[in-house]
Image (cartoon, rainbow, N blue to C red; front, side):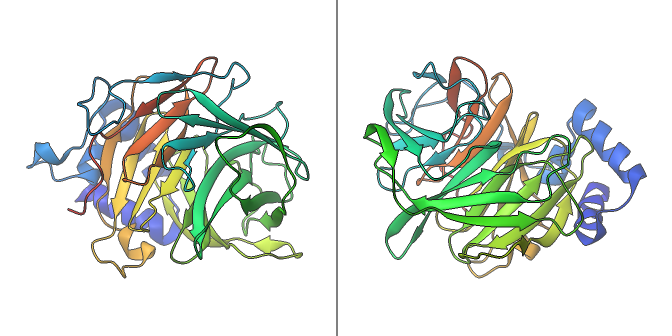
Length: 320
């Protein structure tokens, strides 16, 4: 109950260094964020699944290498809507505006270069659908030194994940965004398919993750993101919202937390005040990205060469 009160207090005002320290050491040393995330009287609901997973359909049993030597810093992850067996990722920095596609066995299937976009510090991407058309949004939001006056969200029609070495010449919409409280590093975004809002989660050493939203709409103006609360989570590196708009996962170097709407029409402000489920991450080096597939299974990739792809939950996320 005490942890739940801390979580709600953060969502309400995001203040309190003392609370930050308490939650930080609880999170790191004792792992009792699980007490926030689940009912301890029901250990079977822990959802803690790592490697050597049981096979569910044709889903991978263990982690696999992403077979692309140019992918050295996988920093975003999104499953294709055009082909649900494909996934998209990109490098963190130094690679240019390249997108890489793979199948779930790690085989490279596609590679696209965005002609009209500069890759400053890409940190995440998300896939979504509007009126039957699939799209991708890329977050150029990295800001380790918290110096950027604005960040950028680039969105465009999803290219073919089975076409390689191509130049993407389609229209790319760019939204310039600033935060209401000044510069922040951000490595995690997601798109709510129902509201068409882009969610952003900032990355900080202290367990204080700012949540913000931005309308996914073309604009020539500088858009100020809307604050949507604060969670006591340190070092957030990825997030995603499921294709049905009912579940949100937020990942860090240490673990991930999963929120699920109890009602279809429930607002995220209500859901994020409920108890999340805590998920242990696979044993990978520096996990930087997390995503749902279209069956609501959760996957992660890691930085480094080779990059690895691994499932977090073997079973689809179901409403509890």
